[in-house]
Amino acid sequence: MQQQSDIEDIDDIDNQQAAAPAAQERIGFLPITTNWFDRVFVGIYLFVALELFWMRFLEQSIPLMVCHLLAIALGVLIVWRG
Image (cartoon, rainbow, N blue to C red; front, top):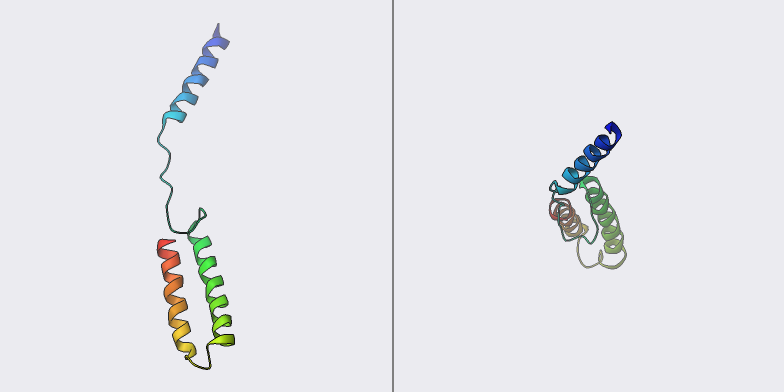
């Protein structure tokens, strides 16, 4: 009889855990679930890619400083809102 009582107690615990509210998941504009480190990594990756693109195609007409400011702004936006 004790064993049956233990099984019922375990079932009650499982039901209580299932009924507990789940932690709210952060929703951003990135199409994947991320934490802050993932967003920093994406921001750095975007920074490097944008700099290389800029140096190849746009540096002759637009200064590289504009790219720095744009890349930093996009990185901050991704970390803050992504």
